[in-house]
Length: 134
Image (cartoon, rainbow, N blue to C red; front, top):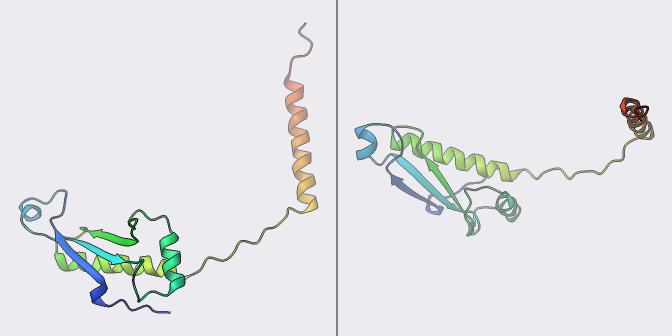
């Protein structure tokens, strides 16, 4: 299932990148801050929206806005592409519902092996104690 997000739902802001880079980094606003309102987006199906908001992702604000900062590259265009690729990866992660966990019980043999190993370990440790030093 492919999800199309219209341009008007994305808010881009261009800022100066941090870190090393000489004069270029001080003059040119190449870093991109991409904002996408996950909580109020009409493009996302309800199930996908719920899964994305339930994730414990520090990029999602309390208001349900995803903030992606891209400053990996030297050009504004490459950083825009990087931010959009990361947005696509984030949404892709919410498309697939996790399989429900099925509770299982250990087999009788496995339980007996575990208890037998516990008994054996106990006797080894018991034999290490110095009982005859009175």
